[in-house]
Structures are given as structure tokens and as C-alpha cells.
Image (cartoon, rainbow, N blue to C red; front, side, top):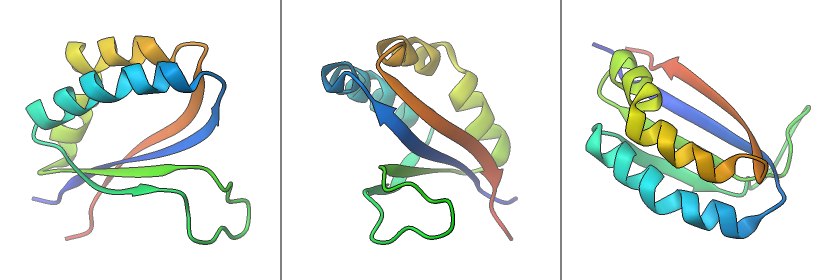
Length: 97
């Protein structure tokens, strides 16, 4: 079974303190659902239409685990901190076997 990944590109942050409030409950929810943050930070380089903004990659044991974790009540509750405070592009993809 192929792994599942969240690829999160932060597009803008208007309230850094709200992001700080999001981090602990989001991390707790990710870990509770078997996720592992495998990369995160500012890009070393950007190409084509890439934005120089923070990227986070979270790995799960399967695509279904990745989807279930994102849709879980505990992760969804953590997103309330970002409402009106940050914009992100979140994609869930299946790893290649």
C-alpha cells in the first residue's frame, strides 16, 4: 500500500499569533492519526510560479489515513485558529510505490 501525503503551501499569514495557536492542536491531531511531519520550512529555491512561502509535508501510512486525518474532528477543530488569519493550499496525494 502506498503512503499518503499532505502537501501544505502557506500562501499568506496575516496573524502569526493565530498560527502559533494552531500548531499545538494540529500537531497533536496529526500524530494521533499516525502522521509524521517529514519536511517543513521556507523553500531553498522557487521556480516557475512558486511562492517563497513555508511548505510542510506530512506523511501517513496510506492515502486513506491521510484523508481521514485531515477530515477528522480534532484536526478540523485546529483549523478554526487559521480562519481569517492565514491562507493555505492543501493537497493530499498518494505516494508512488
